[in-house]
Length: 195
Image (cartoon, rainbow, N blue to C red; front, side, top):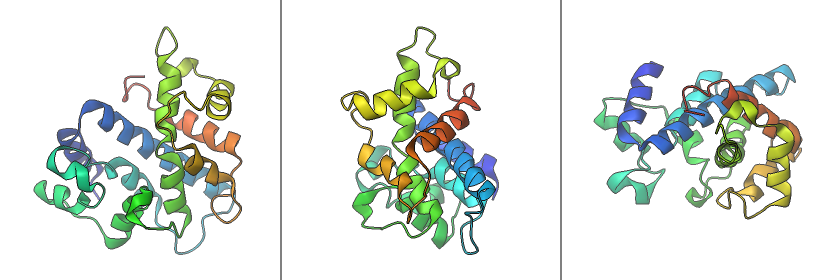
Protein backbone atom coordinates (compact mmCIF):
# COMPACT_ATOMS: atom_id res chain seq x y z
CA UNK A 1 0.00 0.00 0.00
CA UNK A 2 1.34 3.39 -0.98
CA UNK A 3 1.06 5.46 2.21
CA UNK A 4 1.50 8.73 0.34
CA UNK A 5 -1.65 8.14 -1.72
CA UNK A 6 -3.74 7.36 1.36
CA UNK A 7 -2.14 10.25 3.26
CA UNK A 8 -3.06 12.63 0.43
CA UNK A 9 -6.65 11.36 0.38
CA UNK A 10 -7.03 11.76 4.15
CA UNK A 11 -5.56 15.26 4.02
CA UNK A 12 -7.83 16.27 1.14
CA UNK A 13 -11.00 14.91 2.72
CA UNK A 14 -10.70 16.01 6.35
CA UNK A 15 -10.60 19.21 8.37
CA UNK A 16 -7.08 19.91 9.71
CA UNK A 17 -7.86 18.90 13.32
CA UNK A 18 -9.27 15.51 12.24
CA UNK A 19 -6.35 15.06 9.85
CA UNK A 20 -3.87 15.68 12.68
CA UNK A 21 -5.81 13.28 14.90
CA UNK A 22 -5.50 10.66 12.15
CA UNK A 23 -1.72 11.12 11.98
CA UNK A 24 -1.57 10.88 15.78
CA UNK A 25 -3.50 7.61 15.81
CA UNK A 26 -1.32 6.25 13.00
CA UNK A 27 1.75 6.95 15.16
CA UNK A 28 0.13 5.42 18.25
CA UNK A 29 -0.81 2.26 16.39
CA UNK A 30 2.80 1.86 15.26
CA UNK A 31 4.06 2.43 18.79
CA UNK A 32 1.62 -0.08 20.29
CA UNK A 33 2.52 -2.68 17.66
CA UNK A 34 6.24 -2.21 18.34
CA UNK A 35 5.72 -2.52 22.09
CA UNK A 36 3.58 -5.65 21.79
CA UNK A 37 6.03 -7.19 19.36
CA UNK A 38 8.91 -6.51 21.78
CA UNK A 39 6.89 -8.36 24.44
CA UNK A 40 6.24 -11.35 22.15
CA UNK A 41 2.54 -10.53 22.03
CA UNK A 42 2.06 -10.34 18.24
CA UNK A 43 0.85 -13.78 17.31
CA UNK A 44 0.33 -15.41 13.92
CA UNK A 45 -2.84 -14.14 12.31
CA UNK A 46 -2.47 -10.56 13.56
CA UNK A 47 -2.62 -7.88 10.87
CA UNK A 48 0.76 -6.59 9.70
CA UNK A 49 2.34 -3.46 11.20
CA UNK A 50 1.51 -1.67 7.94
CA UNK A 51 -2.17 -2.53 8.41
CA UNK A 52 -2.09 -1.29 12.02
CA UNK A 53 -0.67 2.09 11.02
CA UNK A 54 -2.77 2.40 7.88
CA UNK A 55 -5.91 1.80 9.95
CA UNK A 56 -4.88 4.68 12.21
CA UNK A 57 -4.22 6.94 9.24
CA UNK A 58 -7.51 6.35 7.41
CA UNK A 59 -9.90 5.44 10.24
CA UNK A 60 -11.72 8.81 10.10
CA UNK A 61 -11.54 9.52 6.37
CA UNK A 62 -15.34 9.42 6.10
CA UNK A 63 -15.79 11.73 9.12
CA UNK A 64 -16.62 14.68 6.87
CA UNK A 65 -19.40 16.08 4.74
CA UNK A 66 -22.33 13.86 3.85
CA UNK A 67 -20.61 10.64 4.98
CA UNK A 68 -19.97 11.88 8.54
CA UNK A 69 -23.29 10.58 9.87
CA UNK A 70 -22.49 7.05 8.66
CA UNK A 71 -18.89 7.03 9.93
CA UNK A 72 -17.01 4.65 9.82
CA UNK A 73 -19.25 2.73 7.45
CA UNK A 74 -18.35 4.82 4.41
CA UNK A 75 -14.56 4.39 4.48
CA UNK A 76 -14.45 2.37 1.26
CA UNK A 77 -16.86 4.72 -0.48
CA UNK A 78 -14.69 7.76 0.29
CA UNK A 79 -11.47 5.95 -0.64
CA UNK A 80 -13.03 4.98 -3.98
CA UNK A 81 -13.32 8.68 -4.83
CA UNK A 82 -9.53 8.75 -4.72
CA UNK A 83 -9.20 5.43 -6.63
CA UNK A 84 -8.02 3.65 -3.47
CA UNK A 85 -9.08 0.34 -1.95
CA UNK A 86 -8.58 -1.58 1.28
CA UNK A 87 -8.87 -5.24 2.23
CA UNK A 88 -11.81 -6.68 4.15
CA UNK A 89 -9.58 -7.18 7.21
CA UNK A 90 -8.43 -3.54 7.14
CA UNK A 91 -12.01 -2.36 6.73
CA UNK A 92 -13.02 -4.44 9.76
CA UNK A 93 -10.04 -3.11 11.74
CA UNK A 94 -11.14 0.46 11.00
CA UNK A 95 -14.75 -0.27 11.96
CA UNK A 96 -13.54 -1.78 15.25
CA UNK A 97 -12.53 1.68 16.53
CA UNK A 98 -16.18 2.69 16.84
CA UNK A 99 -18.28 0.75 19.32
CA UNK A 100 -21.56 1.75 17.60
CA UNK A 101 -20.64 -0.48 14.64
CA UNK A 102 -21.36 -3.48 16.85
CA UNK A 103 -17.95 -4.97 16.04
CA UNK A 104 -16.38 -6.46 19.15
CA UNK A 105 -12.60 -6.37 18.74
CA UNK A 106 -11.18 -9.83 18.10
CA UNK A 107 -7.43 -9.21 17.96
CA UNK A 108 -4.69 -6.94 19.31
CA UNK A 109 -4.95 -4.55 16.36
CA UNK A 110 -8.69 -4.05 16.85
CA UNK A 111 -8.32 -3.55 20.60
CA UNK A 112 -5.46 -1.12 20.02
CA UNK A 113 -7.44 1.15 17.71
CA UNK A 114 -10.46 1.02 20.06
CA UNK A 115 -8.36 1.90 23.12
CA UNK A 116 -6.09 4.52 21.53
CA UNK A 117 -8.54 6.45 19.34
CA UNK A 118 -9.87 8.98 21.84
CA UNK A 119 -6.70 9.00 23.97
CA UNK A 120 -4.99 11.09 21.27
CA UNK A 121 -7.48 13.88 22.00
CA UNK A 122 -6.68 13.92 25.70
CA UNK A 123 -2.94 14.01 25.03
CA UNK A 124 -3.48 16.88 22.58
CA UNK A 125 -5.64 18.73 25.13
CA UNK A 126 -2.89 18.43 27.76
CA UNK A 127 -0.35 19.90 25.31
CA UNK A 128 -2.67 22.82 24.56
CA UNK A 129 -2.82 23.98 28.19
CA UNK A 130 0.94 24.66 28.20
CA UNK A 131 2.00 28.18 27.14
CA UNK A 132 4.12 26.69 24.34
CA UNK A 133 1.32 24.34 23.25
CA UNK A 134 4.03 21.75 22.54
CA UNK A 135 3.95 17.99 23.10
CA UNK A 136 7.64 18.08 24.03
CA UNK A 137 6.70 19.64 27.38
CA UNK A 138 3.97 17.12 28.21
CA UNK A 139 4.86 14.67 30.95
CA UNK A 140 3.32 11.26 31.39
CA UNK A 141 2.31 12.10 34.97
CA UNK A 142 0.30 15.08 33.74
CA UNK A 143 -1.63 13.03 31.20
CA UNK A 144 -2.23 10.23 33.71
CA UNK A 145 -3.47 12.66 36.36
CA UNK A 146 -5.94 14.30 33.99
CA UNK A 147 -7.09 10.91 32.73
CA UNK A 148 -7.72 9.47 36.20
CA UNK A 149 -8.64 12.48 38.35
CA UNK A 150 -10.20 15.05 36.04
CA UNK A 151 -13.04 13.38 34.13
CA UNK A 152 -14.31 16.71 32.83
CA UNK A 153 -10.92 17.46 31.23
CA UNK A 154 -11.13 16.47 27.56
CA UNK A 155 -14.57 15.10 28.40
CA UNK A 156 -14.92 13.51 24.97
CA UNK A 157 -12.20 11.03 25.84
CA UNK A 158 -13.83 7.61 26.11
CA UNK A 159 -11.97 6.67 29.27
CA UNK A 160 -14.02 3.48 29.61
CA UNK A 161 -12.58 2.29 26.28
CA UNK A 162 -9.01 3.49 26.85
CA UNK A 163 -8.75 1.66 30.17
CA UNK A 164 -9.61 -1.66 28.51
CA UNK A 165 -5.95 -1.73 27.42
CA UNK A 166 -5.18 -3.25 30.84
CA UNK A 167 -7.41 -6.29 30.48
CA UNK A 168 -5.47 -9.53 30.16
CA UNK A 169 -7.74 -10.78 27.36
CA UNK A 170 -7.36 -7.54 25.36
CA UNK A 171 -3.94 -5.83 25.26
CA UNK A 172 -2.62 -6.61 28.75
CA UNK A 173 -0.76 -3.26 28.83
CA UNK A 174 -0.90 -1.29 32.11
CA UNK A 175 -2.71 2.03 31.65
CA UNK A 176 0.34 4.10 32.51
CA UNK A 177 2.44 2.21 29.94
CA UNK A 178 -0.27 2.50 27.30
CA UNK A 179 -0.50 6.26 27.78
CA UNK A 180 3.30 6.50 27.68
CA UNK A 181 3.45 4.60 24.37
CA UNK A 182 0.89 6.91 22.80
CA UNK A 183 2.45 10.08 24.22
CA UNK A 184 5.95 9.15 23.00
CA UNK A 185 4.55 8.12 19.61
CA UNK A 186 2.80 11.47 19.22
CA UNK A 187 5.87 13.38 20.42
CA UNK A 188 7.79 11.67 17.65
CA UNK A 189 5.61 13.32 14.99
CA UNK A 190 4.94 16.59 16.82
CA UNK A 191 6.00 18.73 13.86
CA UNK A 192 3.59 16.92 11.54
CA UNK A 193 0.64 17.54 13.87
CA UNK A 194 1.55 21.13 14.78
CA UNK A 195 2.19 20.27 18.43
